[in-house]
Image 1 (cartoon, rainbow, N blue to C red):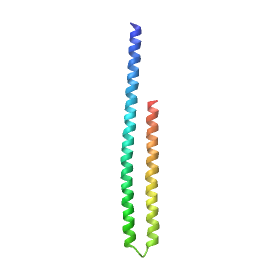
Image 2: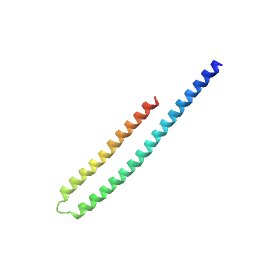
Image 3: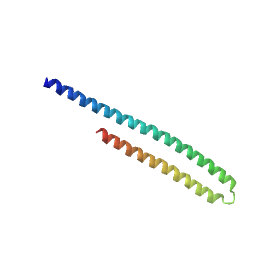
Image 4: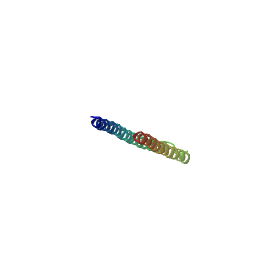
Amino acid sequence: MDHAQVIKKEREDWERMYHKTLKGLEAMIDVQRVMKNIKKLAEEADTTVAEMEGTILTASINNHTTNAMNITQMTKDLHYLIQSDMDDRVFQIQRRLADELN
């Protein structure tokens, strides 16, 4: 009888660990999905900034060089900020989830 209870407890422990692992994996998949959507939005914002750049440069011939440098730098800064920050956050979230699974 004791042996059957030990086996039942081990099975229940494995089931709990299995469900915890599944929940962790689902969370990681959700994070990836959200980050993919955020990156898509960031790319759309980058496209919009590029369109704005073209419009401003066309409208401002007198300050063409200054405007081009400022807008180009803003675009680069925005792109770098979005990409580096998101990649870092995804890594941190996945690391936490992986730690939880361990």
